[in-house]
Length: 151
Image 1 (cartoon, rainbow, N blue to C red):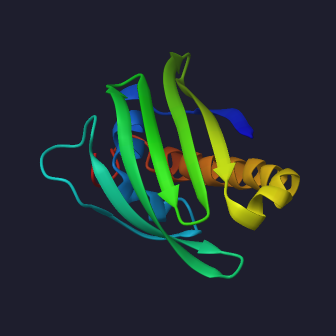
Image 2 (cartoon, helix red, strand yellow; image 1 turned 90 degrees about the vertical axis):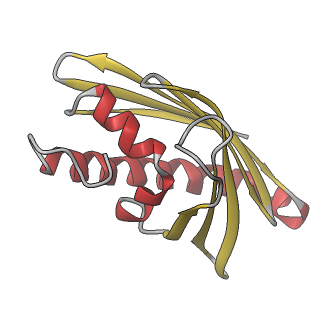
Image 3 (tube, one colour; image 1 turned 30 degrees about the horizontal axis):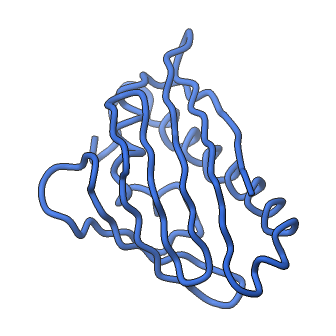
């Protein structure tokens, strides 16, 4: 199933890209993300891997996220693996007057019994993505002229 959307963030494209590209920042704007840590050596780029834990309906789930494309500051593609689901997707960052238009497109592939719940998962996923990125927008815009920590 495909989950897509977009949001305009009133911050420069480079700032939005750099903040989002470091998965360790995600718990700051995604209330479902309990923690995220970088597990590969070197600077963040194509091939960088992160380990994260997210809240689920039944508790929590571990995930591994790998950047499959890294085109600073325009495009970030990733592959996320959990025991119940694989997610492959892309974020794009384009300058617009006054900020950045960020678009997401995720191909979500549930496994096992979750396949039967695909329509529900799609609705929940769309809603969750809107909430996550709206939180990012609030976080970055609230910082005004000073870049967020980690950028």
